[in-house]
Length: 427
Image 1 (spheres, rainbow, N blue to C red):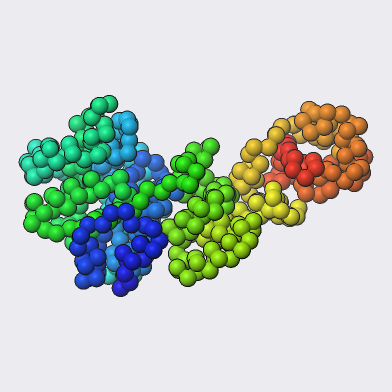
Image 2 (cartoon, rainbow, N blue to C red):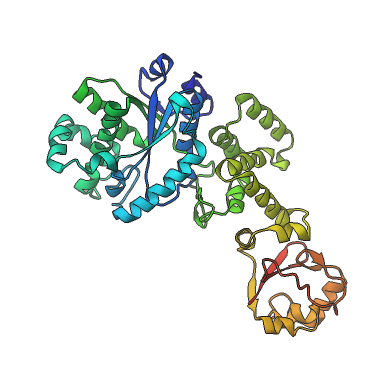
């Protein structure tokens, strides 16, 4: 077994640790769990910190357990929230749980003997647990004073908090107790905002069973510029490619600042200390090459998606920022093509108008509603100067016919000068 705590410490992934935790992990193969909130059918990169924590835990020879909160998802965790959350129906929850479970299976090994990963759903043990039994068997062990002292409660006392959210820490505490009793789970891992909920669990185990359980939390990730990690102008960066394309996913990491990249490469990759330090040295010698960001983007994109998706993201990046061919452009799937050119000016023209266009000069001015050139003269002049291409093929003659090999059967990409792109849809 490797030293899990030492591994997490050099990666900057330890915030709080309960006394005795390291000794417990050295003593025997230990089961630890992290709870994942099924508020959507995909996790986003904020959850990646906890996923990587479980990955490192398993690589250290221990047994990781992912708890998907079928029951707690119906209640809503108040930690870090300023307002009451909308409660989800059972049907939506079941759909979300299936999506989250599938994603977790990409990262953890579920068939490696004694330390095989496991997914559990707390709805399984809460569905038959009635309210009276719960307040008698669980509620009597934890005082209201103890619950009120938690930051997640104190921060909400002025604005108000329902009994539902107030009772959340008891529900999560009982999860730990149930897993301790039924799965021999002695450790709970989570983000630093979960510390209060986690120690409610260790306290319940101590008071109900005179048992010993442990806790480790990771720091909440912050970006160097103060903006929220995992957010873009378009919202969350998701692990599901249908919600965030591999191209956009790769770009998120590629655009990280040097300071953030040094932090992220420790947290989100499996590279060793020596590999990271060598990479940093290389990066510092030529920061403009962005080696850290490229290596970070590569490893995480392959880990979350696939090597094929990473290759597609690189091709897509080169189309905008580097040298690329017509073949590269044609090889992009429709989703990636639209993701790459999401912000560029676009227009649609019908097939009849496209077919009736005499030449590229007419097409680039009149047919495309003067989106690209306001006059035929302007279009003709720039074509003659070699400054226009369609689907990465440079135009040489103002009177030539329009390129008819449509991308994905319906798109043409026009490039004017070095940096101006236009996407035309033929309908």
